[in-house]
Image (cartoon, rainbow, N blue to C red; front, side, top):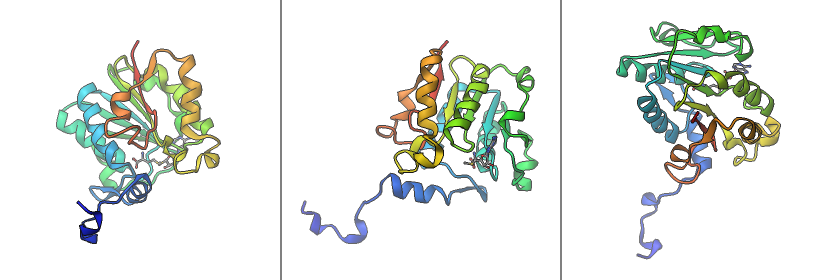
Length: 211
Ligand SMILES: C[S@@+](CC[C@H](N)C(=O)[O-])C[C@H]1O[C@@H](n2cnc3c(N)ncnc32)[C@H](O)[C@@H]1O
């Protein structure tokens, strides 16, 4: 079919930049929850596959992501979210959720003793996205990730968006340095490439613990 014959309002035209622009506006139950649409779908599949009894989210912001995951856990009738930030921006709907615990002393101030009662732990790093903080956080939390669960490193997409300098190399640089020293983790291409090669904000960021 000749392209010119397609009416202009039926044109399909989007890419990672338009998706990035849209993801900044996403709300969940009225709370800002900036995550790519691909990652919402991938997260719910990972959560129902792993069935974690603890999700540690590093970087809460307004808590929309924590709320989304806590509701997913509620549907599965299992698990809680520990969400960690350096600020306290969350509305009541997040603060009062029975499956969400909020911590405000940064990833640096979170005591790993708190994970002791849990058996299946999933960790999501979604804080400042600087290379240093990303590597610092994943290095601190790697050992609490249980076998066959995930250490998800958010927002390596900053490279593709031309912004990695702002983050001193950003999450992808941190992942590149982390992996050779941590053979217990592999990049799970099943999720990174689910919708196309790294069609996610978490470029090479779905790290599966295999041992
Ligand atoms: C991208 S936002 C998190 C978005 C959130 N996960 C969501 O789904 O809506 C990044 C957050 O990381 C927080 N942050 C920055 N440095 C941090 C640190 N050292 N420890 C924990 N959180 C930090 C910022 O305050 C900010 O709220």
